[in-house]
Amino acid sequence: MPSSMGTGLAGATMAAENASVANSLNTNGNNNIMNVGNLNKLAEFCATNGEYHSAIEYYLKLTNIDPDNGPAWTALGHCYLLIEDL
Image (tube, rainbow, N blue to C red; front, side, top):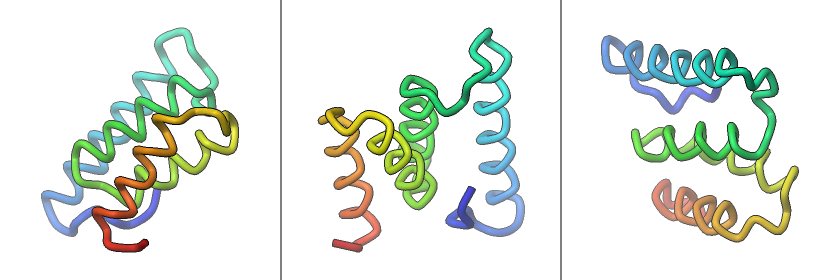
């Protein structure tokens, strides 16, 4: 994952939460983290926690797999807006 996370305890906590979410997705009988549902969950989790660069990476992967996913494109644009990279 990209390094948009903070340093110190806050950054370590966010990294641990991301790892926990990814591990949860992998152990819930869904071994393919690169599917649309899992990518969407990871992207939403990152965006909700202010990790916009990570969310952008997941949304880009998601829109490559499913280019007709309008909500993913909208969320991707919103993340770019929030990091002021339009």
